[in-house]
Length: 150
Image: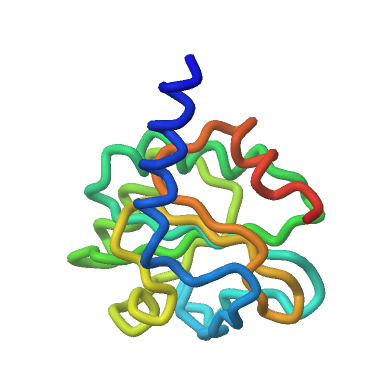
């Protein structure tokens, strides 16, 4: 059991090696939503969970629905990256009954947040500093644990 925990921890740390560092300042882009309304990624008044996904990502299909179960006192934003068209993103989101803002990202956003694995998550405070980060599937319980007051 200890070996399995050690291996899991090692793989997780390795997968997160290229992500923004804890306490690093995150950029706040203003992006179009699916309704074409310009919306900032980050909130200036509360912590934000930013979930980066690609519509073709099978792990994203399994995990994105868990975002709707998060607390109302946490700003939650899903940012689509690596997609071919807005229609592709709308279809992906429409199939999942999401209750969170969905923004249309681009390669500049992906580079700034150092996203190269889907899904990628960041928890960012109201001042724009990274509090937490993760990649891959996360259950609702895992998301609640990652977004707890840090």
